[in-house]
Amino acid sequence: MKLLEDRIRRDGTIRGTDVLKVDRFLNHQMDIALINELGKEFHRLFADCGVNKILTIEASGIGIACLTAQYFNVPVIFAKKNKTKNIAGDVYTSKVESFTHGKVYDIIVSKEFLGPQDRVLLIDDFLANGSALQGLIKLVQDAGATLVGAGICVEKAFQPGGDLIRSMGVRVESLARVKSMDESTHSIEFC
Image (cartoon, rainbow, N blue to C red; front, side, top):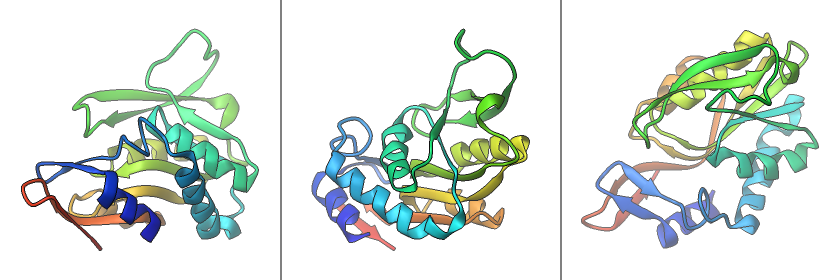
């Protein structure tokens, strides 16, 4: 998606050859008009899939998922990284390793909100090594729900996550696929 690629070139920050910061517009400070356009594009891509739930992981995916959900007119579920007192009853759990934070989290979704009747679209800001998506996929599978695909804003195509998730038979639609980037030359190349 040229709109997102242009914004990454203009306002993204490269650290080394593997960290791309988009916190000026996507996952810390959020440009709502831009994210609204991303939501429209995800809807265009998955409109014929019968989506009735959108699932993401806290925290960076929530805003993107919400603006996407308005086009599908469906609820958003976000997997929490910690069990809290206000999640009562049975839960689905999965482990996720965060590329950014270098930690392993247990992610949790209440069984009340996800079940066999659901057709789920996953939405996230980044795809790097694929751990977050693998964790979300496990939650969908454990619920007996149908996974229709994953909508990703930025895929680092030089890391193994995209190939891994696609090899699992999951449809992945990434709006910007980064082929390479280099902080020393301030360059970024898209697929």
